[in-house]
Image 1 (cartoon, helix red, strand yellow):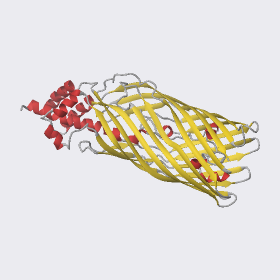
Image 2 (image 1 turned 90 degrees about the vertical axis):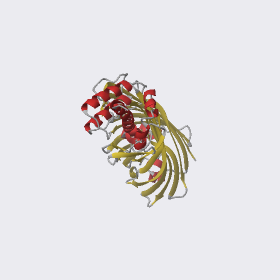
Image 3 (image 1 turned 90 degrees about the horizontal axis):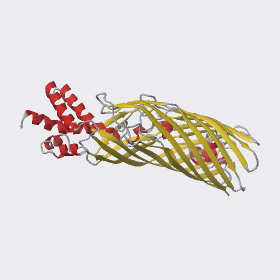
Image 4 (image 1 turned 120 degrees about the vertical axis):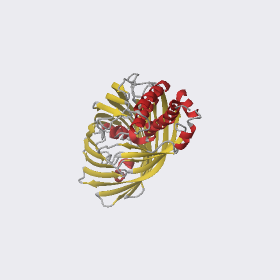
Length: 478
């Protein structure tokens, strides 16, 4: 075998190993979930109408089963409640993308990556004695989805992203005194994720050649010749695709308190603990013919064996991830003709410094993804006016901060600080049946992004985001 053929044979498995590292981050399923766009509050049409002000203290809605179990003490009898919220989110990119060599990446702006999805919720709360209440709820406290057009310029950063947590919550409250109630919840949570992205085979092949020269494996002249060969074998635009799926069940808890300050004023505190997961799933790859030929080349087999096996084959993987702790303070004033409230919630995102991903295929090394998120806040004020015995009008405003900034924001969830304006109606056709409607428009600050992936592909620009919510609920009391 000639020296040139040896170099060519060595380049092929090394390029594939580098490509593996380049897409290893794709198995970091939750790494793209970003605070406001990831955390969902939409579990009550009534609360949405007043921007969730008083969500843990108003006590007139069965969603307190999951928002503050202590507030169940304000409910009488038994209540069945079903809610569904249609979430419409728009995300449109404008900017440029460049590969490792500074060349423009072909493709459009990806279209509108947002989507419209329903978020259902169901609650039952029952007064079992003068001081004890029990409740059960099904809700979705975390989730997001974005979907870009195939072939867009940011395809190496993201194509499709879907993340969802579903909770089954069992709650109980006890009236410790006439003016103080304590509540506790047990939570079973299923979290699932699916991510796809394109793989830039040309970029990682060239990057590997540079690493080989820097490490002394090749002389600069050999590296230059090898780069030409790799460029001819996998030219720019030679893309594959990675599709990652994973899920896990885990368990957590929640504790809340409710104080009746006066006959008309209530204060509530609620703490929801983080829930730790280990997402386990599979990785599937589509590999272009040129790379498939490399994998099947007999001269490459010994080198692949030395590196632990063949990369870009279907494999398993796992990644630790936690849905964050959330603390909420809530106030509600109840008058004869109106109600008024405030909410302040804090979400502990700062524990997400990095994420380690492990693969079942030994040819794909562990990867560590950096986060460096910061804690976020949600603040709202809102109220309702009782126009008649049957009709209620609601209103509210809120500010929802994001833990991301330009250095940590990416294309999967291009989130930024949000401002909410909400409106709602309630109608009681009878003493037992209650119907509610909630509407919200979300204004999102321009989300600037300057993202460079592991293959050196860079996405620079900004996202124009906005959101609209429509929520309906029906509650039956008996």
